[in-house]
Image (cartoon, rainbow, N blue to C red; front, side):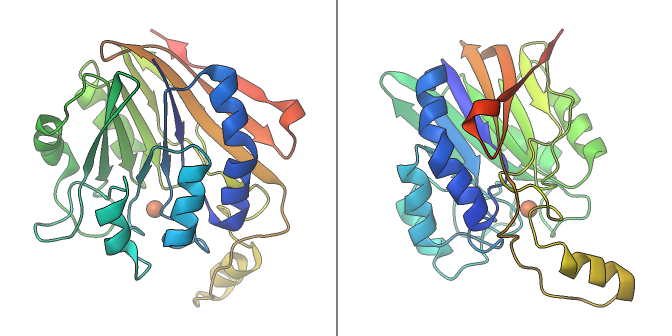
Length: 266
Ligand code: FE2
C-alpha cells in the first residue's frame, strides 16, 4: 500500500500547487491514500469550507491541522462533516477528533495529529497522549502528523515511538529537512516542508517579517502570491504496518523537473 503525505499547504499558491499536481502523482505512484496538513491553506491562517472541498476534490483523503485549526469560523462545522482532524492533545472539551480511521478499496490507514509542546499553544503532553491516541487506531498502518516547532522535540518523539508506528512526519516550520529515513520500519522526517510560495518567508510575503525583525513591531503577514511555487510530498510504502520504502517528491513550478530524494534506510 502506498501513501502520500503533504506538509503545510500555504494559501492559494499552495492550493494551486496541490490541485495542479496531486492527481498526476496519485496516478504515477499508484497512491492508495493522501493525507495533508491544511491549517494554513486559506490566506495562510486556517481553512474555509470552500477551500476544504477544493482540496478533497484534488485527491486528499484526510486533512490534519495544528495551531491554526480553529482560525476560521466554520472550522467546527467542517470538522463535524469532513475527514478533518485537529491535534489530539488539545485539552478536554475542545471540539473535534485527533484520530481518523479511513478505509478504501479494502485498504486502511489510521492518522493521528498531535501538536508539540515547545513554543506552541498550551496543550497536553504529546509524548503521553499518543498512547491513548494509538488505542483509537483501527488500522495497523499508522501515520502521525507531529505539528511542532523544535526539531529536537520531533527527533525525540520519533525515537520514542520508532518501531511502533508506520510513519511519523513533522509539520509546522514550513521548511523541509533532509533527514528522511526509515529506522526499524518507521519512516520519519523532521519537517516535510510547505507546498506554496518558495521565495517568501515560510510561504508568506517577505516584506512584513523583515520589517518585524527590523523594528520589533508586529506587521500583518500576507501570503506571497507572485513567487515561484513549490510542491512537496512524502510517498511511503507499507506492508502490515511496517514502512518498507519512502521518498520525497519536490517540484518547483514545472512538472518536468521533479526531484526525488530517497529515504535513508537502516
Ligand atoms: Fe502550524
